[in-house]
Length: 129
Image 1 (cartoon, rainbow, N blue to C red):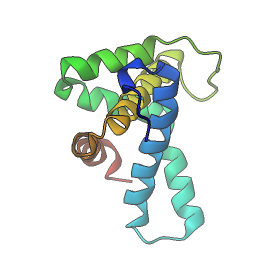
Image 2 (tube, rainbow, N blue to C red):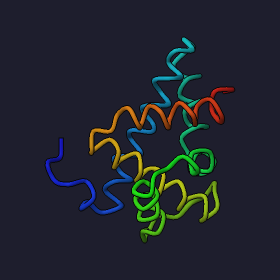
Image 3 (spheres, rainbow, N blue to C red):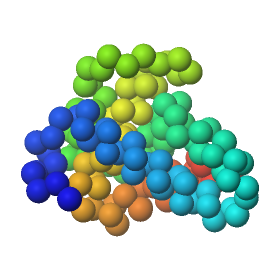
C-alpha cells in the first residue's frame, strides 16, 4: 500500500488506481451472475466506460462529502492527452473524476465508503444489466 498521503498524489495516479478499483467491483458483481466468461467480459465492457461512469457519478453526486467532491473535481479538471472515441469530452472528464475518487478512497483505506457508493451505483444504474 502507498505510504504517502493519497491527497498528495496526482489526479492521474488516483484515476489510474480508481479505474482498477471500479473495474474490479463491476467484475465481482458480474461474476455472481455465473455466466460464460466471454459474456461477463462483454457485460463489463458495457459498464466500465466513460459514459457509464459519468452516469454513475451523477447518481452519487448528492451523497459526496466536501472532501470527496474536491477529489472528484481534481480528477475531472486534470489535463490529459487521452482522446475519447465513444463518449463526449464531458463524460470522459467526469469519468476520470469518478476514477480519481475511487482511487483516493481505496488508497486511504475507506473500503466501507467504496462499497456503500458502489452499491448505490450498482442498484441505480448497473443492477439491471
